[in-house]
Length: 140
Image 1 (cartoon, rainbow, N blue to C red):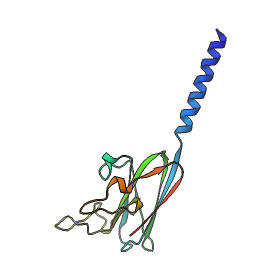
Image 2 (cartoon, rainbow, N blue to C red):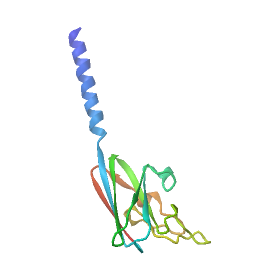
Image 3 (cartoon, rainbow, N blue to C red):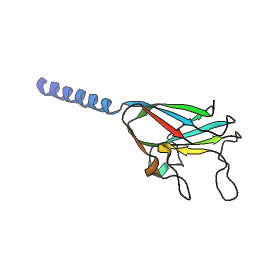
Image 4 (cartoon, rainbow, N blue to C red):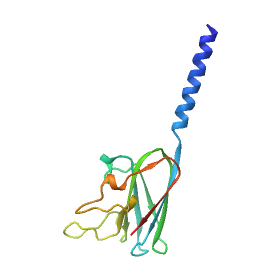
């Protein structure tokens, strides 16, 4: 009987080790350059699925601007597929300002420098896979 218990304990420990190995987390550094000004702040969102893209953020951050650039870091992000979007909130009102046609008045961008045509960028164009620490450069 003790041999069976030992085998079960060993299997349980091995399974726990495998689960912990798969739960690794990484850091994502986002470098945004080419902003119009140093006014306001950068509001950035990290999205973890297509159905939540541009609506429900997995993580978010607020960045400061210096020399028309901003750098923001997301820490302890699990392996997976993600996309990033940001807006340059120049007037510090917490939202993207648009004109009467709905066209943005403030800078915005997405990972992979994804651009939208007659609307926002698509998840397919902005997504990236995270398996190790990653740096995302977004240039306006």
